[in-house]
Length: 538
Image 1 (cartoon, rainbow, N blue to C red):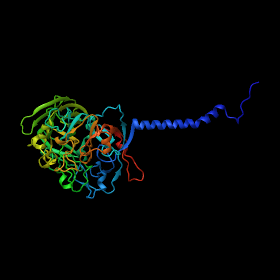
Image 2 (cartoon, one colour; image 1 turned 90 degrees about the horizontal axis):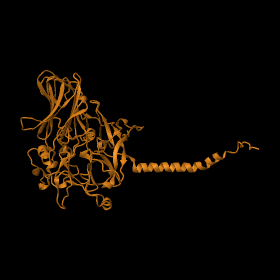
Image 3 (spheres, rainbow, N blue to C red; image 1 turned 135 degrees about the horizontal axis):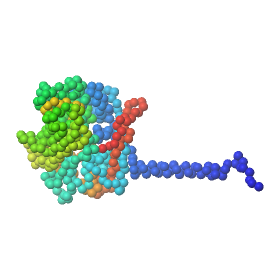
Image 4 (cartoon, rainbow, N blue to C red; image 1 turned 135 degrees about the vertical axis):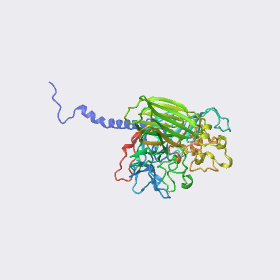
């Protein structure tokens, strides 16, 4: 006789077994999940909050957000705004107007993801952004840009990075900048695009006929709402007004002192801040309409005792871009490179002209059409940037005076746009490159060794497992130039890779690759993130 169905009050055997094992299974699942999360954090990706402004404006620590009602510009300024005992003034970077500091939005630092380093990870590439434990304060985590890699020598020359493979230096002998093998380190395009910093943008002008820092040299120019128009068949020029708008490595992020002129002079003497240096690595971009056959337009860079001219002309429907060069005491030009490009007649064509790291790059309509690099030595670079002096005179250290740190002797650059025929220039903008200072606020021009890497007697020499890093905000970054000796614990634990100003590779945590949760508004009742700054890190 078959058994009857089980009573409703008696649970099935499988149900009872499930109840008995549910708690252990849950504990195992939670433990596995926590273990995976721990492994992921330790070995794959970790979150990190940027504390200070040493990488500004590329990456931001705690800062204030400023909006200009005149120009619509939105920019960050250092959190020192409320900490300074001096009068704090914020200036619109596109005008000479001071902005009110009351009621500014205070924001936290950017939150980033770091791709963790493992023993099998390769050394990051030069100019990558890295996170590491500080060699002078190992409990702190720091973010900088990688400049020097193992077995290299590094020199900072007129704001740029020069590299030489370490050929072995005898103990007690310093390397010199006369030696062979030095070469400039050029940034990849993706990084160069990320680090351009604005000098002026005609899209930000306030008056309908305001010319900004540009001076039309004849009366056949008109300007309306930021657009320059040249009429007729003759030739004329727009010239950058260097007398009232010097091209230096100023940043609105740092200019919060009422005694610091944001346009003219180095600012180092009056304000007590680090001086500002002339920057000759520049970007000029604009949209151009109406180049007739036979008409030309040229952008002329007056930099480091030379002139470089990027010419644009249309003939028989073909757009030709050419780069010429000459010393400023020569009458004739030498053609350096040329290429043809496509441009639609009757439409605005975008031109983007870069001079960075001793190289020119020209983009037309977003397409790279022309490149030209020139490989000056350190000696040629300095003697061009500081005319009238030899390298031996510049690096002499008589009486403790470091001439390479004196900003006023470096030649100021100039920009000119020559047009022949009818043309209109839209959205004319000038940006500058990063500039690595040979000066630091903690050091004086006299009586102190020059910051590391900025003089032949402090050339950076890296061995196996040694790195060198700098901050993008060079005037206000405490980095490999001025760290000094390693923490005693680091020196004892890592005797083979620690050293003055050096980052041992064992302290490298990983590479920063994403701003995943941007700065929070700290002064609002409900914290609001600025999602407009979610981006990949270059």
